[in-house]
Length: 155
Image (tube, rainbow, N blue to C red; front, side, top):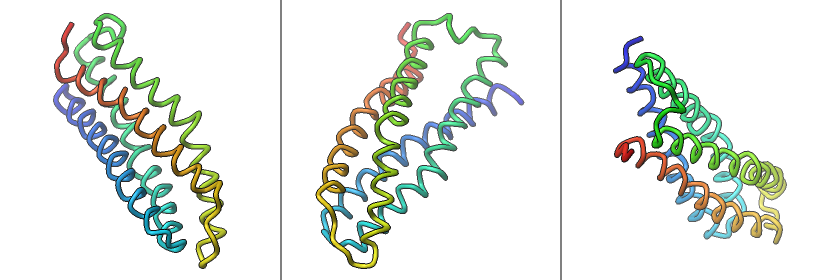
């Protein structure tokens, strides 16, 4: 593998990750706003599907490509300030996802299956939806910061 291929894999992963988390937040908010249990349940199912097919693989490609490019270049991932900070920001976002967002999504997926055929949407589901969007936005901030550091390499 060449440096350029590793860098392409890395950038493709970043695009998949950032694109999916941004687009998913928009259409989930719009789906939740319909108050139609079938639409909300469908959107919730898509959150799970796109997280496994785009977000997860975006993370994998980001890491494989990024560390691959560093290895090919003979660089130390802990040597440069921007490299350390971008990795730290990536980890912070990952901890928010794994510790807060994934458990919310699991609860919401279970609840959505229960009201998918026209049942009522619970207050707990609505509360989790608000928490999901708030923590989702919070988790996006370190990813945007890491992306900026990757591009600008300020130090």
